[in-house]
Length: 194
Image (tube, rainbow, N blue to C red):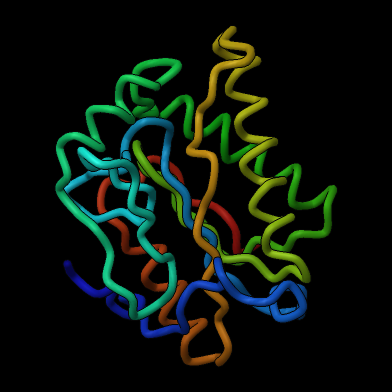
């Protein structure tokens, strides 16, 4: 088992298990999510989902500093068997459609997008928002809807069902997080900061 490392950009850890009150505080957040089917439970990069065993299921705690599970073939195979569609790897055209939808939804929902990068298999967005869970859902929902409409794939998922929300508490960490997002490898589309 490996322990979750602190964010590469030097900020604070995820609030996935944090209190709802803390999550609703106004602030800057790094939102991260993956495209559908590209990072499954059992993956060698690590995961915090249920692990299948011969005797049942073990739940991996999803708390900063806790060990995470990794490279579990039985679990990954079971997750792959449940996929509703093949894994999603975005094209540049699809990334542009998703970005336009996120920018429009951000404006309409008062989600200030400070920086964003969309790669073929994941997305990072830094937002200034009072409820990061809502922000994550709005951005993923709007972009997924736009992609489904453009590709005639109504009802099929584009993104994983959840995502990560890292609270950025200082200006120094905000600058580092923006640099981290803008310096991603293989960016299909960058956005925000207007």
